[in-house]
Image (tube, rainbow, N blue to C red):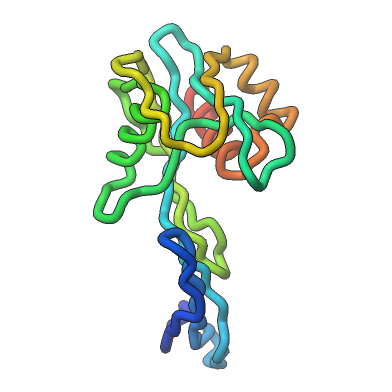
Length: 179
């Protein structure tokens, strides 16, 4: 099967550093050309399921603008320009929680939207995490750092306690990896 090919691209909206909308002219696998394929550009990001030395999992109870009520969330954030995903994961874990981990396991990298772009999510499992610094508060939402057992994490996952798809995915992949 022949892959799709981008013939041209035009920026139609630039909204700050985190959102660009482009219009692409695309040739699809059967040779047809679509002149106005919408494409969303957002930064790639990381999410980290962090397990402490005593087998607890770090996550936040927090609010976000697009979520009704509170949600549980793993550490994570945007990858800085030129930064490798694992370096971003290490940085985000340290900044948000004050924890560093000795073992890092990549859980995969996934395009957010197969047809419209919206960046790539990179998921990691960080093991043997321990507190080495104070967190650097920089996020706009209110959040509380929790230390949950595996059973509590699984129960929260089953009850849709992680209200963002990427967060639920990072947790599910990490717990699955641990067996």
